[in-house]
Length: 138
Image 1 (tube, rainbow, N blue to C red):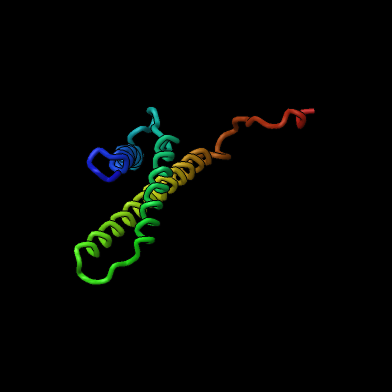
Image 2 (spheres, rainbow, N blue to C red):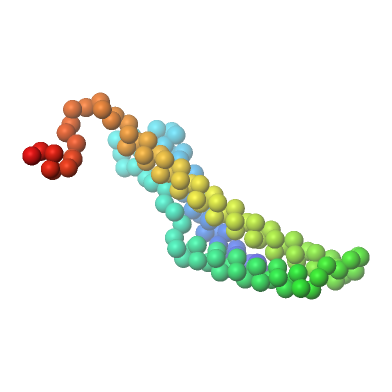
């Protein structure tokens, strides 16, 4: 799962690529690039990525449960160090998944807020008729 080229690393790499795209979109807006040109939008990560995260979280939760059943080993034995290290790794991987999902939700929420603010810019500044309910015309 956590080995090189494993599921967890693929999920992390896909997130990193998406995050680079988010940074590029935000930087182009902050730099004024895109005014009068095509505008790029931040999209959420696809359902496949989210499904992979859910699957990994389930699998890691099962690993955490197994480690919990084995119990905490006291002392400085090799077994105690292995269990402690494995437990820490599983917890860190779960925290990483939660953090990536939270960052993705926040980025999409900020994008939606940005789109709303851009759509509100200029409201009331022009005399262009807006579409409305047809029955008001009668």
